[in-house]
Image (cartoon, rainbow, N blue to C red; front, side, top):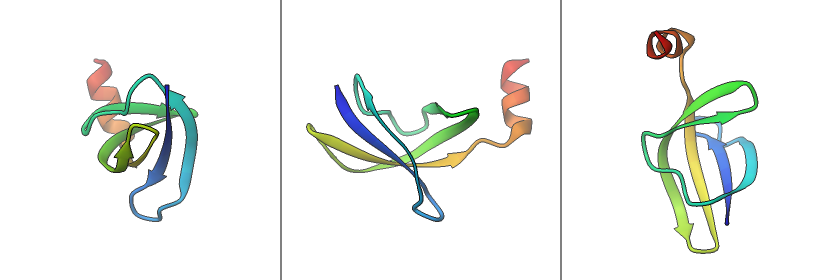
Amino acid sequence: MIPVQYRDSQTEEILDRRYEECAPRMGERVQIGFVEYQVLFRWRCVPTSCIVYVRRVPAEVRVQAAA
C-alpha cells in the first residue's frame, strides 16, 4: 500500500489522502467523494508516497461514458 495525495491541478488544494495498492496511472479516472476526477500527472512518485494532480470530469462526459 502506498499513500497517495490527490490535488486539484489548478488550485493545488488537497482533495483527498488515502492508501492505494499502486499509484494511479495518467488518464485513469478516480472517485473522490461523489465526484469523478481524471489523473493528469503524478509528481514526486516514489515507493513510499505519491502526489497526484487531477481535474474534475465534466458531468456531460460522465453521462456519455455511462451510456
